[in-house]
Length: 377
Ligand SMILES: Cc1ncc(COP(=O)(O)O)c(C=O)c1O
Image (cartoon, rainbow, N blue to C red; front, side, top):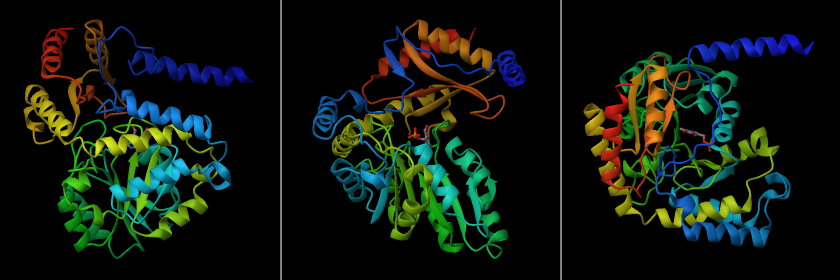
């Protein structure tokens, strides 16, 4: 019986190999510089963050021991949630085990069958997959194209009970971002529930690292704010914050990803809390990160210079060539991500460079030199 299954799986896997789209987990070693992580301030190595994680293990043990509604929600989780609520200026919120689970929960349980979701065409897989599972209808608008979004809002505003608009702040594969002021202005014209995923904006933007919404002064207008602990905060997990307590209560009662999963470990919560405290004061590091981004973008894609995020895509197009250049960089000691379809659209395979505040311009120069050689592959 199992042969048929294995044959089908192998056929699919071979097909991926032929198209250079096969994915595998690798233990990368021998590099000097990791430009493939989302830890934009390298806080996962910070002595204070490590020490708080150790301390939490000693106080609470290595695991939370249960799902949050049983006994998994511990004082270290409450401390973290309180700190994040203050930081992001929201009255209510909850923690999730991952950003993936948070996005799944928001879209699977909040929109109803009489609602419409409008999502940017390039939203992260955690959102895209949830769109297919929710009872509401959904439509995609052009990437960052708020005119397209406006047309959709205009056409559909009378037909649905509620309209949700969901976008990332900093897009995970392109490093670009929408004008949140224009998005909020649109919300005043055609009311909708605004969901913003600040996975990659948190820490990097805003006077206290509160994210792109803080930077653009629109935090109060974001109805549902998602952020992760696994990127700039050097830990793992996520949070969902809302202007309205009912949203959080409803998810607490309905979201299987929250209710039926062992809660994040005390060490993860304590590490993230310490990281938030540090990152708030990282203004100089934020400035440096922007300068590095500007410098690299100018060299690889000057038209993207207005975006100052640390995610810088180097478009290659062909999947095999993308892997070959990644390997050349790795041989010379620099690790970058090689991202291929279906993570990104067809023929847009790319190297995904994730900068961090602890490197210097000389590393970017080195990267550019190797890229120049690598492109001859
Ligand atoms: C925009 C965005 N949202 C959500 C997630 C998922 O977050 P997590 O890694 O915590 O599951 C990611 C992770 O890559 C992301 O890039």
